[in-house]
Image: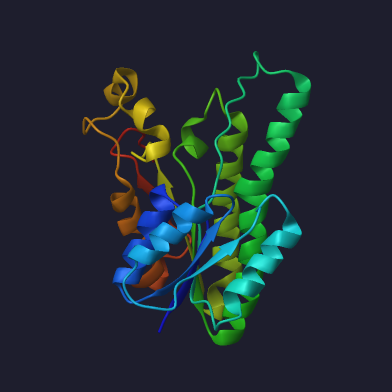
Length: 244
């Protein structure tokens, strides 16, 4: 039976990913930082058995290594989904130097360095076991910019570059790397924001994506995408930002 590690799995997109993977027969390890009760509630809804929880603060490189070791202790990990991320607001003209520095440090640690660390451990194990898949969750902000959250946009642009570098480096070992880049998603955390008329005015569909829609694309990459798609970045933003 296939096994997957999903970071940031306590709610929103992460929980939807876990449900979609479990529905396909995958055994899931759900990572969470502080939402243990929510992660456990998600775990209890998953079909199948053997699903586990692992806590880790991804800002700590040592915690990333422990997370991988704990997740892989029960057997080979076939799929890693780096979904966890933070989106702190820090407009450059309205943020003081200490806060600016601290937010950049933590955002890059969680959104970029942590996926890099987990990809490193995954790549080594997957190469030894004859293959595997990594799916990194990016953002349209990597392409359009985020004027009030520049560290977030920069971290996601870095994640795109990391993913494509790894896709080249790992292809010969049978390890595929994909990126899914959503726009706004209707999660509970941003529900009031994405209902704002200004946000909706930027959505050609008249609404933002649901977590389940984003999860559907992630699971396609994790289980179904042809290997020749490795290195691809898939946009899921309802045509709110188009790139060539």
